[in-house]
Every structure is written in structure tokens, then in C-alpha cells.
Length: 216
Ligand code: URA
Image 1 (cartoon, rainbow, N blue to C red):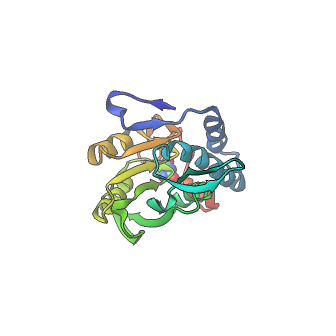
Image 2 (image 1 turned 90 degrees about the horizontal axis):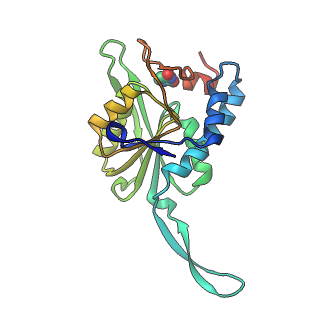
Image 3 (image 1 turned 135 degrees about the vertical axis):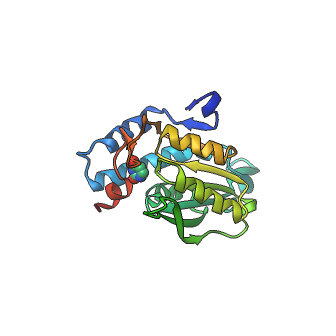
């Protein structure tokens, strides 16, 4: 794990060899839809390890072969995973496999073609967000417009302890998120070079939703 300094202090890049290897396979345009989806599931579990580092714990009374003890367990009910539709669902599935008791929400945003601003079309999140560690998931932090808008909505719904989990981030997206939500830690597998004029991350991996769902 690399914690960057200064401007990027709120950014964690997970530089574990397994993560970097899988990311390279995902970037490769020759990787099939099925392969991409499987890799996304695997990499999301490795990224989940980092993003949940300080997640809430509780204890449960168990009996070892020697004695009784209060042993630590994850308090999954104190956690909310929020998928930013639609590509967020690819990351969500893998993380949920690791933390099956986490509560789950969805935020749907589309980009208005004229204003280029995100418009909400769906919002359904667990109750009592203020009591939970809230992890918003979206594979690509590109311009940051929709990610910032999603975090705005989650804060309006009561979230105070938020993290953002993505696969790739652009410097522009990280700066935008930092400006709007300096309290939100970003966890990613890589910080890429920049954005094309159409808002794609480069070198990137293309459209994450299209690659995972086989659409064009
Ligand atoms: N969304 C994607 O799916 N890919 C990008 O490169 C940028 C935004």
C-alpha cells in the first residue's frame, strides 16, 4: 500500500503485486467480458482488504477447545456499501462476498448531455447512514462529477464516515473529490495519467460498464 503525501494525502494506492497483475489483465483490450468480470470480482476483494482496514468490530462469545472467550468479529451491520450505478455493481459483488452482512444501497446518476452535469435517477440506501461506515464503490474516478454528486447525496442522507473505492483514478478526479469532500478517503488500484477530452481515463481500461457487461 502506498500513502501519497501533500495533495494526495487522502488517496491510498493499493500497489500489491496481485492487484497490479490483475489490473494489467483488465486493461488489456484482448481480455474477454467474462475474464474482465472475473478479474473485477477478484480485485475488488483485494481492494476491500484495504478499504475496510478500520471497519467496525464487535465481539462474540465462543468456546475454543480450551475455554470460552469473547472473540472479535466484523460488525457488518454497521457498514453500508453503496454502488454507483451501473459499473459500481461489478465492485459491489466482490466486496459483498467478503462482508455478506453489509447493508447495500444504490445511487443512479446519468450525465445530462447539455449541461454535462450528473442528474439523479435512482436513490435507495439503508436507514441510519449516520451510524455506519459508508463505502461508495465505482470503478472509475474520472472527472469526479458523478462521484462528488453521489457523495453529496449520501451526506444529505446522513452519512458522515465515508470512503470511496475505485479501480482507477485520474489526477483530475482525485483533485475534484478532494476539493468537494476532503474528508473522504479514496482507495484505488492506480492513479493514471489523465483524462481524454471525452472524459475517459488514460491509459485506462475503456468503459468499465461496457467491458463488464459486454455492451457498447
Ligand atoms: N468511465 C469509464 O467507464 N471509463 C473511463 O475511462 C471513464 C469513466
